[in-house]
Length: 129
Image (tube, helix red, strand yellow):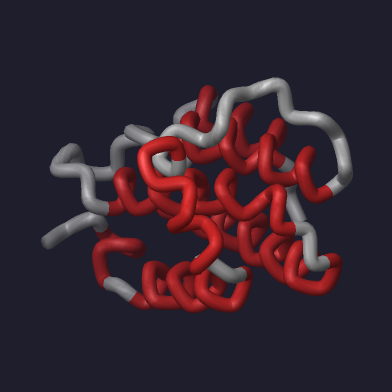
C-alpha cells in the first residue's frame, strides 16, 4: 500500500487522478480500520476532513482535477499522526470547530460506510455527472 508522501509525489507528477483517488481511498480505509481497532477517537475529526476533501475532488466541476486532493492528503497525514499518538500541532480540524458536539456522533463505522458509499458513486471513477 502506498503512503501519503508517495501519493503526493504522484499528484505532483500529474499521474491519473482516478488511480490516485483509489490509492487515497485504500489508505483512508486502512487507517479507518486501524482506528476502529485501536479506538483512537482523537483522529476522527481529521478523518472527517479527509473524506470531505476527497468528496470535494470527486464532485469538482473540473474534470479529473487534483482539486482537494492535496488538502485530503494533508488531513490524512494528521489523522495518521493522531492514530500513532503523535501530537498534531494544529487547531481543531476546520469543519469540526463550528460544532464540537458533532464529533461525538461520528464513529469509525460511520466513516467507513461513508467511504464505501463515496467509492460506489459513478463520479468517484469518472468525475462525470
